[in-house]
Length: 250
Image 1 (cartoon, rainbow, N blue to C red):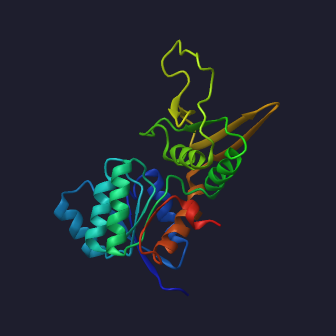
Image 2: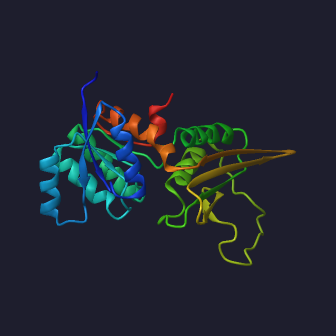
């Protein structure tokens, strides 16, 4: 068997954290070292890290905690696998540079569902040929950020290959502010928040006489666990930070 990997979980008592703990228990290569309670005072959190001695910290906390938790990983030589979105572009660039300097692997992924990653990649493929596009993302009503990290990552991947185009009628007017959604590089992102949902995204393309819809649905949080497992094992062989699980998928 490959070398065992010691894994701590920040937010182990949360809904995603509980799924991570169950996944770790089912893989003999992974050892759950405990819950990192980042709500404690800084010296207590440092003490927890020293006692648990994890190789990897899986972080499913809040957008307000992730930057601090990544700094903690740098201080202790721990490799983070982060599923919490909310870092600013400037913070992401800073962390990319700092983890590269430290020679330490790190993965930040807006979405760990393999199907969601394929949805993003397929959307980027389609955008080369069908540049008229809108993104609709739907999540549970306890989600803190909008649009979702997955939608933003999808939009970035689309914008990188899509011809420059401002969509819609040039004289269109919103009779209710926000009716057309958020604008990103000339196209729109719409966020829906309702109880009963988990994580869903649909990317709609329109062209003369045809439409294309690419959709992914996470029915439960267990859907993210194969991606988390893959990221934990991959980050042990990395010496810098990557943003997005698509970098691990051919």
